[in-house]
Length: 54
Image: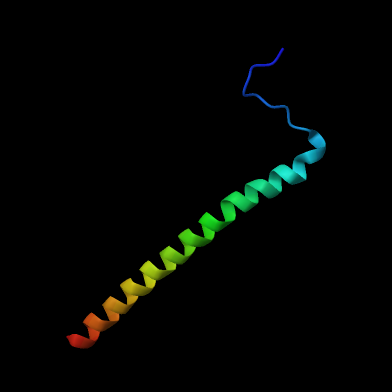
């Protein structure tokens, strides 16, 4: 007897589960990395601009 909402995972389908997890995770990881790079770039640009002013 199983509870509703629970699902047995077929051990032979581990590759499919892993692939689905990667496909869900990768776009957000790339987006977060690009946003971080943009923030660092802007911070460095402002620091350089301030250095050139003074």
